[in-house]
Image (cartoon, rainbow, N blue to C red; front, top):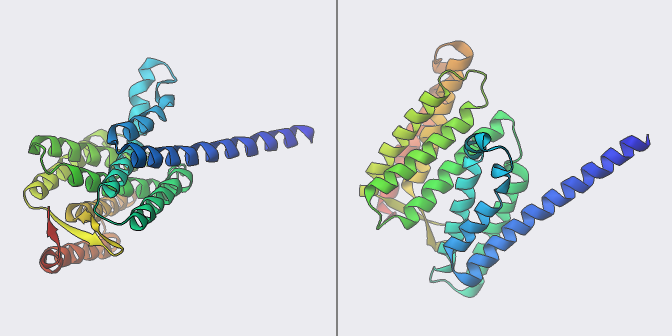
Length: 266
């Protein structure tokens, strides 16, 4: 009985420390970005927080890096978007509100979404990485060479696909399909680089979300539903994908045909 109490006490303390460290990381990032106006220092904090990647034998470093890549993409994207808020021509109260909301959402990611290993959460994690990764990329890459944007989009697509496929027992085609999805997202990124439309958020007009971010998530969700159907039935059943297909196509058509008129070119 005493042993059980001891184990529970240690478990509670571990959870408490884990929660405090993650909240501390989020606060440290937003304060660093706000007071120094430096993306580099914010990203450095993210990378330092990933020290456990290297806390094993060197032969496991690459595998650890790949398994943490989605979280790294999300965290770096959060830093970039927080920095964008600090550079936006908005009032102090609105700036602090946006920074606070962004920090709370990041804490929610660290404490609720990221630790989960169920397939539904893993898919959500990949979707968040795709959304925020492309959002941050197209926010800062307007003066970059197109080759860098394409490579970054490929990395986002590869990491998201690998993250989802790792939840399935079938590992034969994981690498191949991840590479293919990275290529598809890279091609979407190439098109978006030459024709980028962004939409302002409801609460602010200074933070724009690129159209390519929404399209990337929609197409990625459709690809996931197709693979999931094939995995369970050895073929893609129309009954499994018809609703995601119609939703994706209709959403993209609405974005391209209707919302392009109210979007902003970036």
